[in-house]
Image (cartoon, rainbow, N blue to C red):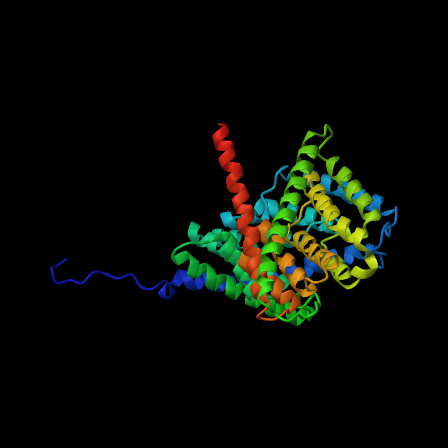
Length: 422
């Protein structure tokens, strides 16, 4: 090279063929994810019709439910063995953070999750759908010989395609994936564009066929914004952190209990199903994902009574913990939304001066925000699901950040104590 030669400048990534291949994959994954969501959600909702028409009050369930939930557990145990699923499956958060889904496990995860949700387990559909979309993105791009980095980016696009229809909002889906996965550098822009395209295409296809959206799912009373509500949001955030801590303790206790059971692995889900089925007979609102049940809590809080409103969120934590620990497969977001929303209704019933719209939206976001560690997307989710208003999102953000930082502070203190002991 001569002294007068100019250095070679690499073209922008948008001028490279590899980038447009990723965008093409994102379009295909959006279409695929929409149809996968329609089939999976449609099948699980149709299979769960045995729960319709339930009395939400104390002992409103039927005793035959226990046979259904235990039978679903037995089916889960057999399916796990046939599919050779490991005892400890990677969770949704781990899949997103690693930007990887083991394609060999996807059929088993989907089958077991479908039976779990039809059988009334307190879990959400996001694990199965994420596995379908992320697994398809990684598998297809790997088969085409894409680089490891592009395979991971295609996996994120697969997640976005699977969730575009489920959450009915490109903004929520993209925010959640980017917050949890946290791709850095130039990968961030590529991942951002890929997830936007995939989730937008998925939502478009899903909406045209299903004609329904997840947004505006819960009708809460509007309230006038005042300065003191920001301080109230801090208190609600601290309460959410307490709820998340309690939920974590129950999950750990259930996991330890089922780990110590001296029974075959295929029997554990049947026992777990019998347990949450028994709880469901006494407290029907603890069954399934919690989406429809939370609408009942919000609309019928006065008739349900204070005692039931206190017990139901705690019982939901128990059924979620038992479902996970005993081998059922599903996601944590929907159960956490139920726990948070129900806790918000409880706060308003105990302290009527706290507006229902404030308490419900703040805790609806702050509890899953402490569990999933995606605070901004949880704020968007709560605001879009309730249509509470732009100004009223400020307290939601304060509550979520308070809950998130409190949980991180607790984790830091626990880790520091353990290091000191060693």
